[in-house]
Length: 342
Ligand SMILES: [Zn+2]
Image (cartoon, rainbow, N blue to C red):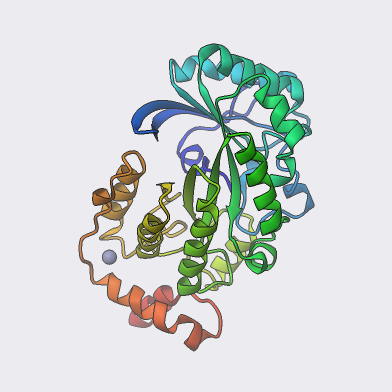
């Protein structure tokens, strides 16, 4: 799971091998300050795990392409730099793992690290835990040491990782990578997923809160990511058959609020929020909650997590109570009730 998809979906995609998929700037709250951050989505050969099945909710590989070389990646990066200007933080997303040398060859990674080092830019990259080895992290730190590494942890429950997400690693694998980063004082950003498939709304909230609690021990930042229905995925197939509904924004808000107990920086910007493929409520109250989550993410001020009262909260509460009982599994009950009213 990556953090880029909402923006990449909104922006025109460049197709040639020497151009990044998307480039933009945004704000980042870091150590009490609001900083300018640049985001570059690089096109690579894709996530190693995608080539062996992939995660049930991930469709990012549509922007990957076989045959992308180190030279292509360097060209993408250098062409993107003028578009981000003078920023304090640079976020580089690929469709998989920056630390995987098969995906981002060493010479390309080195060029990017050297540029960040010379500009004094903090660099955030993503990786699956199997590539977070002491040797690889030490190599990177020898070039640039102001680093944050993000891992798509998703769930602290091995059954959810295996059967619901098909994540291809275990909680122990994540913990090992977290320890390697902590020992080297590299900040860890952990992605926590809300509502993997086959979990009811209530189970998904409990799973996400438990995952935040687990990850808070070793993470500098936790990014709470609501599942959005991406084309060509297992989740997409379930959704088309009414067997999946993306999380309610009420659920997202509840998880973010519960995360306060764990004393860690939390960010949340629901991908496709308010749309039927993203986290959504009734349509009336969605934007207020989304705006509050965004404001909170760049301020860490919990008073921004506002929500007006809305009648759909009653339906959400009812679904939390009955979904598993009446369906024996998961179902888009909101869609079912709406269809009955027609
Ligand atoms: Zn509502």
